Length: 111
Image (cartoon, rainbow, N blue to C red; front, side, top):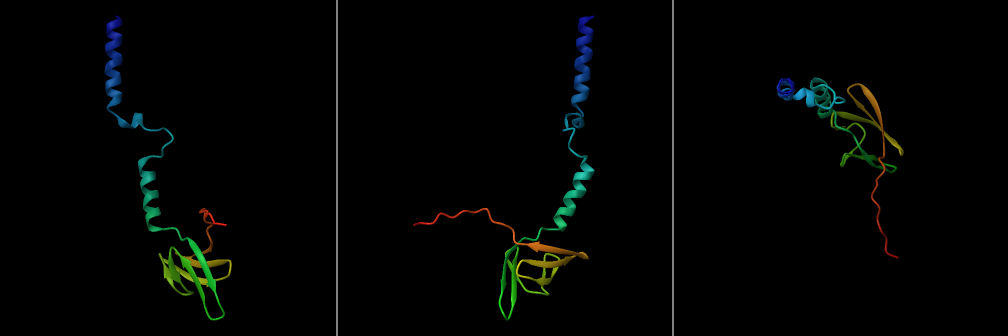
């Protein structure tokens, strides 16, 4: 009787190990959800406002390491307005306000 139970358990274990979904993390979303999310992320890259330069004659912003002025397009977004604290862009019909991202680099100065 004991041998039959052991054989049955081993057979069941072998069958269950053939299905990788049983070993998958239960908190992980299904593959079809993860696939659609990755496609959306590739199409819409993030816009990082790095610097704003304003003088009497011109307004310039640096977004994703590229120099832009009002009316320019960058990564599928059109620059609408440049202010001293923010830049407004329109992407896919949505108006987005970009603010300068803080840097985490620290520099040591010699005294």
